[in-house]
Length: 536
Image 1 (cartoon, rainbow, N blue to C red):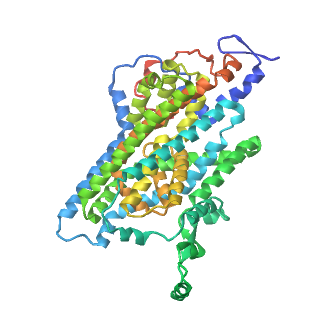
Image 2: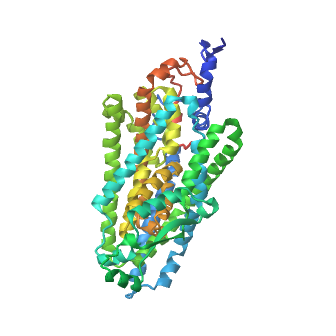
């Protein structure tokens, strides 16, 4: 039997049994966190704000401030241009005003394919659940279940409240609807999950088209007393323009699982996708920094195009309240109920102990930047085992985005209501699946959900230009949904910690970090927690 020494000089028996968990702690999410914190902890009191700290916080929130400035500038520009003449601006003139915003949307669309594919493959391929056993399985099951709950809740609310309802003639809506049965839509959804050509899937989606009978066929049917329905139409198929996100998501998921199972043999390819994912995150960050300019001209053009601005603002307010209601119900009803049901503990004190992390999440609008604070609150105030918190949270900050998933589902259906485009049951199911996948692929940076929002719209054939409807309030909703993302990660860590007591007790008492099960080392300095906004 090998005998190792921990950092305090004590012997640790059965070191070979501990090595799988050591390797787990050295995996990429944990390694990134440890390099960022470098052994620090969150236990000491804060220093008084300093000029340097305030400047750091200002730099962190600079994007939000610029985005708000872009929104206000766009509104001002739109009203100034509308008031500069009595007649409505022509379509060509609107295109000129919208040009800068159109370039911004094109850049967002270009990011969808490489960002989602590389992020999914990298995230799923890095989840080596064999090293963490039941702990990893429980965490992953919790992530998937709560994200799906968030999407379903969002869909129920937006369909029930109908914030984007229009007063147009119902026949106009009917004329836009594609004549197809629910069964056909569901079968198209499943067909698109398994594209025969991945290159084709990058640009086209499969679609069933029903061809109505000719006048001669109708006359013949009437002669024999037969009533022709839509199920009697001739079925044909075609490929329509638009990325087949469903097929690429399924393929990326399978490839990620395969690379994870291959171990060392699959590591070179997995490293490639991990590097590609990192590069796409950086490019996404660059593009997001251009959003204030794009937002300004998109909003100005939208105001020039709108006939009734007051009606649009009313619907936008209803949309804002719908998303907030969904986030509140999910964050403070569904998640606490699930936590209490599984752990048999009251969740309210647990949530109160996470106040510092939730406030930081709201302030930074970044779940990644909040990660050190979240781990500190869990371990110091809620007594979560460090081996659980430092495994569950870094992965959760990457793939568990309940607030983002709910927001994207609500936004997509709201936009379809605003555009007077009806959605079938199959379309709603496609939105739920795509919103879940998009939340996994969303970067942990401010307003990255705006990028994946374009992907969700593309899935149901909605024009990405409609994103301009929701941009004016997106910067604020981004902070609320990030707070719910962090709350979901925290409650998940607490839930997994309670369920994994047996596995944790069977592991060695000390781990690679020098932290014993249930014991906390407090080595942080006050300088480490002055601003709480350093992303990792």
